[in-house]
Each structure stands twice: as C-alpha cells, then as structure tokens.
Amino acid sequence: MIIRKLFKFENAHIVRGCSSVKCRSSLHGHSYQVELLFESNFLDNGQMVYDFGLMKQNMKDIIDCFDHSIAIWSGDEEKYIADMQLHSDRWVLLPVSPSAEQFSRVIFVFIDKLLSLTTTINGEREVKLHSVIVHETATGYAQAFREDAYSQNMGEIDLNEIEFSHEIQKSWQDARLFDKIKNSESFLNPKSV
Ligand SMILES: Nc1nc2c(c(=O)[nH]1)N=C([C@H](O)[C@H](O)COP(=O)(O)OP(=O)(O)OP(=O)(O)O)CN2
Image (cartoon, rainbow, N blue to C red; front, side, top):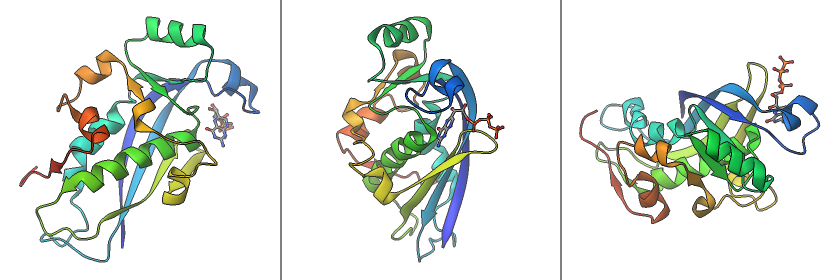
C-alpha cells in the first residue's frame, strides 16, 4: 500500500543553463507542493502504514527549511551567491541546481535518511519512502524514486554539502536536527502527537 502526505513551501530561485529564458536568467518564485509517498505491506497498531501526524514533526521541519527562502546552487557565480546571502535572511545552498527534479532528489535523500534513523514505537513495519513529488507550478512536477535520488548520473546529493542560513536554523524545533541527520544519530518517535 502507498500513502501520501502533502506539504507546501514558497521558494525563490534561478535555474542556470535551462532552455526557458525567464527561468535561467531572472530570479523568480514558486508555491511548491511536495508529496511524500510511503509504502508498506503492513499496518501499525492504529491500522495505518505510518501516522500522518508523525510526519508533521521532523519531516515537516525539513521541508519548512525551504519555505520563504532562496535556493542557491553552489556552482552559481560567486558574486550572485554572496549577494543573495547578503540580502535574504533565509537561504539554502545546494550542491545541485534548484530545478523541480533536484528538489525532489534532495528532499528524498533527507526524508529517507531521517526515516532510516527513526525508531518507531507503534507497530510500524517495513515502511519505506516510495518517492517524492515536487510540483513547481500547477502544471509541472518532478517525481524522484530511490534510484533517481542516489543516481550519480544526476549529481551526488551529499548532505554535508548543503548549508542552511542561520535564520533557518533558528526555526528548527530541534536545534540539532540537521547535525543529527548528517551524523546518523537516532530519532525516537513520540508516543502521541
Ligand atoms: N523539467 C523542468 N522544466 C522546467 C523547470 C524545472 O524545474 N524542471 N523549471 C522551470 C522554471 O522554474 C519555470 O518558472 C517554470 O516553467 P513553466 O512550467 O514553463 O511555468 P509556467 O508557469 O509558464 O507554465 P504554464 O504551464 O505555461 O502555465 C522551467 N522548466
């Protein structure tokens, strides 16, 4: 069975090198919708694959990092990167360009790592991240499956190469959220949410 939870964030970017002139040469924003799809052949004590309420803790915090922020590719011009970081309190520096495709891969890697580090306590079994869909507009989306997220052909997503601005870090409920994920520290699901 597959379950799906929808999240939203507002983000600005330029996607260098693409065919769409407006997209590659002008700073612009999108109201993104992100679908996390999980799969399992088992149900927990509440007869659910994975309680949607549990997804509104650390998983939501990760996706909210991108909200009202600017996504910058570390391969962009140094002056552009410095200017964006100077003029926006909330920015995320990524090792890949912020296309819908790369957003879906980055979010997959984050959520997959978090899920693998999480100890569940309500009978959840063999819950896996199936895919991540990122809707950039009402008409265009990208869907990353496991093989896409970890594909070397599409550029490696190394979490150590991702940087969140201080203002974003301040908004985390768990101040060590990102460090814990990078250092592979364990997370314990709460009894109630
Ligand atoms: N495969 C992709 N193509 C494009 C991406 C992308 O991330 N992946 N991104 C863009 C731009 O960011 C652009 O702003 C969105 O382009 P587009 O879908 O053409 O947007 P419109 O709102 O103009 O779409 P309509 O369907 O015409 O309303 C470009 N391409």
